[in-house]
Length: 266
Ligand code: NAD
Image (cartoon, rainbow, N blue to C red; front, side, top):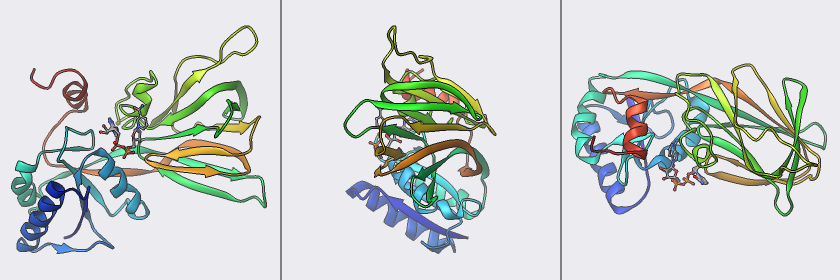
């Protein structure tokens, strides 16, 4: 089996990376950064986001596993002292593969029908670089609302515990193929109105944001942030693609939620 490692590049993560490469090659695995079948991410959730984007062109052939060298992560849930156990399980192929939904983001530009498509593991946000964001929100080809405020966030189920949670969104189990739209400080008064609650949309639904004031926007896709110029519309849907995680032991999602946000000792 071919493997690759993404390190956060700090001293501990790099040391673990060297150890893992040595152990795995001793067990007959081949280090291949181009076509890995399994990618070990060593660092934190941010490191796994980097690994995901590096290998997003071969999601069907690649499974991810995360080791955290800082605090417990949502994607990085193995601890450094478990590395030997992990290496043995990988070499014996003793793991299951679980799949989580992803978000497809398509940005259409005003000129020459150009567009760009991205995949998000956590979320995509839209903000206006200088002024209040004013966007028409369309759901399945029907006008839903005119949003005015700081920004909008569309998250995946596995990203629902990240930025989405800070915006008051619900935590969604990643077995549900869905996406969630949350508001960032919407303006609500006698003149302007938004729904004022997170919306959970199923697969096959489309959400299109069309600029009312614009045309330049800051759009994030996970940790990546870009200023997009001359934007005609931004479309969100649940992707047909999925991310695959190698699962070596059960660590239920709700246990991860309680360990991360409530109490890790009970
Ligand atoms: P980072 O690695 O410092 O991540 C920021 C924090 O988000 C870390 O504590 C990380 O563990 C946590 N995180 C990432 N994905 C998570 C997930 N799915 N569930 C729970 N926690 C998660 O910074 P980065 O590499 O730039 O990460 C980008 C992510 O940061 C974005 O995808 C976004 O979700 C998150 N973020 C959060 C806020 C906020 O909570 N107010 C603001 C901006 C970005």
